[in-house]
Length: 441
Ligand code: HEC
Image (tube, rainbow, N blue to C red; front, side, top):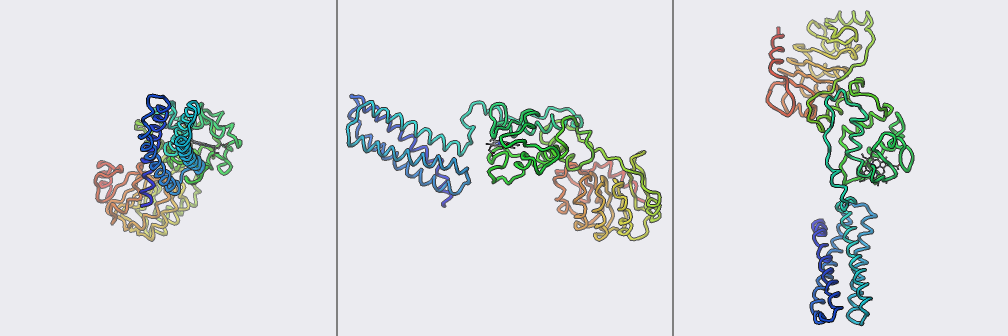
């Protein structure tokens, strides 16, 4: 109920403003001789205005306690409102008990008109933000689409990072306004910092004021962008963090950066959100050293087939087809070279949830076949940290759609699972499924 009454405030406030402005007008007319007889209306108008002012102030005070507005702004608006109302009462009293010179009355009228306008404006700032009354502001709210043809060719700083600043920060940190003495519209400005010095310390997230600010809780006064402004998406925060921790440099393109899966995933999400062009960011894998001959032998002796996936970067597909030991143990041994395994085929093995614990070690996996195994949703929990995964086959497992809800935000992941039907995710197309079926013994 209290909240409801508080919410009446934005509605009620228009009454005293309107009514008292009419009152001021009548008072003005009264100073001109031929309108002397309108005295009787004045009182009615003034009292209606006064009652609505009191109602506005009460609902306003209730509102101020509940809605977490910036305390300074509330303070100004509140005391302007109360002060202005008191001045109205004093003026009304004087008008009714003393005779004043016309010039004096008119000056008073102008003063009161200005005060009531300022009070209203201060209230407007609270609900609509400081920029509400500025003409320039309108066009800036339009987000321009991402102007890159191929995401892999995009420059990390110029096309992505600066785009985020342009979109979320320039209204206060651009050419027209430099809140906190900070401009974020060019690289040099970003690097030269604001009133408290540099806002980016190369490769140091903890010391970079800009990163600290965007990570602060939204309720924190120092959080950027300030509450009530368009906030950054998680993937945009990830991208800014990555950029700063990698030296905030300006020359790398998306295709140059090596497999930092979180960054690649963020770029993909960013691209999905702001570009219409259907083009996918690629993952460049780091070069690995050759696997020691002994290790290789040990693993192969367990029955693992290791198939090199390209000539000399030492990445493999491991197939468990001939593994005779328990699959859990075999996986444990294989995990010694988990970095090198990007495809893992466990189809038709008797892998269960307990064996699946070993899967969490395979962080580089991109493709994983678990079809025709005993895995359930519990075992799938072990895949949570495998960010690179872009193909997961769960055909003929006891897993239902609900168990897969964890993956609903993974638009880059192809899932094959029993109850295939159209979902929000990309699903392996049927040709792929036929291919898999053909491989069955
Ligand atoms: C609605 C206006 C507004 C927007 C939008 C905004 N800021 Fe700010 N920012 C401010 C104000 C006001 C200050 C100064 C007060 C303070 O220090 O909190 C400030 C201060 C800062 C400072 C501290 C500067 C210094 O040297 O003290 C940083 C860093 C900052 N903003 C980063 C950002 C980033 C990054 C964005 C966009 C993601 C952003 N701001 C968006 C209003 C804004």
